[in-house]
Length: 311
Image (cartoon, rainbow, N blue to C red; front, side, top):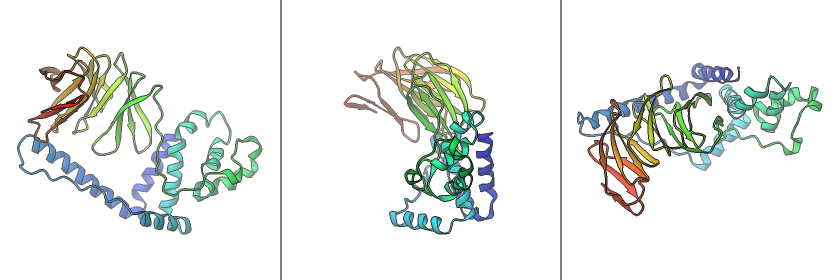
């Protein structure tokens, strides 16, 4: 029940009074993103003339980060302690999920090797002495230094081949990745868990895109096709066939109705995502199409190939 434990930590962090200000800020951020998504669709349809783009979150200075780290080391709050255990679980969830039942005290071993201080490291020190002879432990002097603000929160493991492309849903809660192993995986970014692995392509995945409404994802492949996936049930909705070579790039209109794909066959194809029909094949490049971008109003598309761009 490793992943259930991660969810438990997140559930506590959503209601604990100590975390009220962070919860308030996160709700405000989600509301801004949801408004932006609605406005983006309205702008694409011509219903509004001005698109208000949310500001990028401010980047903390080195001084602010160091000050916060020092506070957490000297006087950690309940939220700090919960986050430390959650970060540990995020990094070790896959190992614990696979091997904790086979190896006694694996969790304590991994906690000891996780850090030389902090809530997780200190907790490991309290239980390790009674079982140390059975475990594979770092020497005390070689344990990693505790970092209360790690850059890596979760390690997502599930693909068996190189990962070639990834996209995140507009709400920041899920991701969709594609790999050389010919599969795509839908991830829960809060728990780090693979929700569903989907198979449909016969060759490696080369491009991934999530629709702005978060309802669907698209994958392009070296098998020359694109697949539209339903993110609610993880099912293949339709296969888009029209290219003669690898699909290297895909882009979706802000209203999630249309897509353009670019291929090694030097063409772009405009697709109707509701019907799966190819509406138009766009020619003009002499070399493989490597990148595509729509204008916010969806009236124009820019394609890139070798040393040229076509608008």
